[in-house]
Image (tube, rainbow, N blue to C red; front, side, top):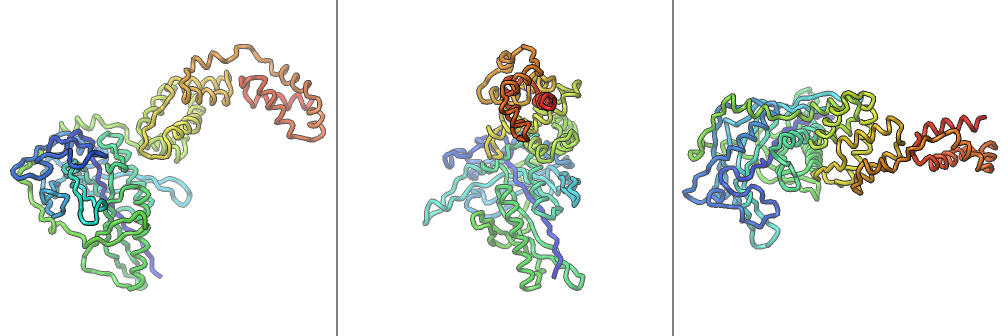
Length: 493
């Protein structure tokens, strides 16, 4: 009856990985800490205290802006965002209103078109600004009381605000994952969502094409504090379905401009209305008189620009061009340790083009398999690579040069990975004798006359039995394809 299109914008809060908080010297990492131990008079909002700016947070904000193709504001200031909530002891949050550090950037994502080809899309950024986090209200320890933990008060956050350029949950997830990759690549945040280092606020509504050709818009819903990619996708899908259902029931669109704030319940798989959305005027923004504006010159920006690594989207395209699949390329770029390992290996074999294809097969299949077994299912698990780059290359080279079979090389990889064996030690177990394949195949056939008769009678399964016996005799030192060819030749005589 109606044609719908989805409009999505994301506000992503990233906890910056500074040692201390944004305006005081308290420890910035409070995950699993006892309540209210990482606080001081400044971050707990005591009267008469004065905040002192953390320069490292400014550096990180500039670095993040450059990584997201933003323009860096040369003059930026601090504002008070006033609202009352028990876990905000000052009664206001120090944030940035009209002069954020970063503005007008973009993030490139890659989507599959109808032909399963990857095409690029740019998601525009409106801004990224610094602000301090609030504390935490704990409601589930008592029926009578709410407990307050102020450890997170003053934690530096970078709020990254996109334009409403996304049109599906798929695009939103791709964009959010790319933001996480970039923050990790430039080492401004660990973005460990299990520890609250990265959270999403989702703005979603629908554009409705009506029967008469006119357009209407459903009210914008802001879904707060979503803390996983899975929940991000589910919350968007739920809101799309809910807003369609509401519109089709009434065919009425509220044109009062009001937005609603909703909370995501992961157990129920649904959002619930929390309050009418506040606008800027409700927060009564005004410049903070206690924190000086920051002037950023070009030299400061350029010094930080020099420290940027190659961005994940650039590497993703590079790995696709080398022949790695989309899935494997994403697995690699999701962790800079793995991406750096691959790039270093490729540099080491740059003068050995005959190795590249086989090496990439090994990397994408065998090495990633070992890594996945070691790290488990958690996306945030640390990646540990238990084989030196030079050893992996040499292992592949032994296969390419037919010194050992692929199966034996895989056994070597497992021995190195699981048991800490050295490649030199394993190479010493390789027999140096020259194997006369003709003699071995002929001998195995001669010693198995009954099987030979079965094969000649049409039992082709016997061929694989012969193959296994010969591979056992050659101790994995002869390529299986060579054995098959020789076996077929002799059996056909």
